[in-house]
Image (cartoon, rainbow, N blue to C red; front, side):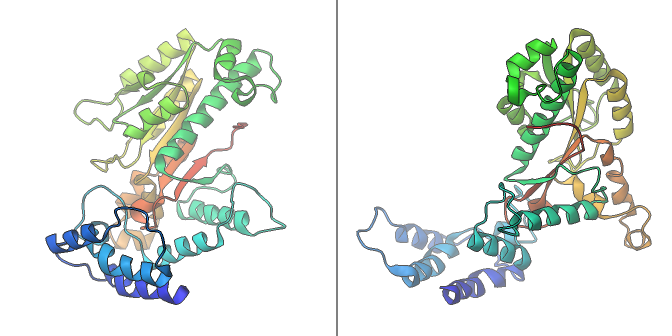
Length: 345
């Protein structure tokens, strides 16, 4: 079986990592052949692995677009995949581990995953001791959902403890969202952002905050930047009316690649009014942390300015980063890093 799979890789995949056909789209003939070779109904008998391998390699794979493998591809980021990333994905599929159950005496799987996350923190120059709640997720939407869930839990737990609940009982996981709001006298929750990705509204819908409560407070001329007057007004109004806030900051806006430039000012506002959490959607932008403004090597190759774009990301309470954007790993290993808070989901 392995030898047959190796042949498919060698004949169809590996050449495309070095050279890509031009044009990157399949020809009309290849599309027609692939369409005619698709099965219209379930066969009564199979053709075996050899037959399936030949069918896929000769008839169907040529009819797929090579767009994500091409250096000329600037469309939707589905990501290419390097041979090293493909190997990791291939082996992960073979061993088929459950990394949601930590059984270190039975498997190395969760220890390996945690070590990989620790090394990513090192790569992004984020202290391991500060960002201990790390996890891989299935996509950046899932990472943003986790960010809003952690924010929701931490903000309401703070209010519940003030209302007299013991720390262990002060949890949405115990009380439910509605009961937690009622007992903590929280009148609502809002998400404040500047040119937020569509996944933020989706995340707000999933965690029960609601799309209606996602507010764009960006500047009209530079929509990825916060209008600080609007942000302060929203935070102040929320604090007065018993509404807690989640501020979602974009690092590497999906259409422009722009970064918020005043993260420290946002942090000061959040600290001033309290009852707020900062989540950074850094699907693209977290990779600017690979470079350092203090590195001579990065300065020599002209990347020290890039390093400064994400220098203040450490002021966040949680960060989402996307491995399939610039690392060219197979979709979708996404990193989620919450700062240490007394938060349980």
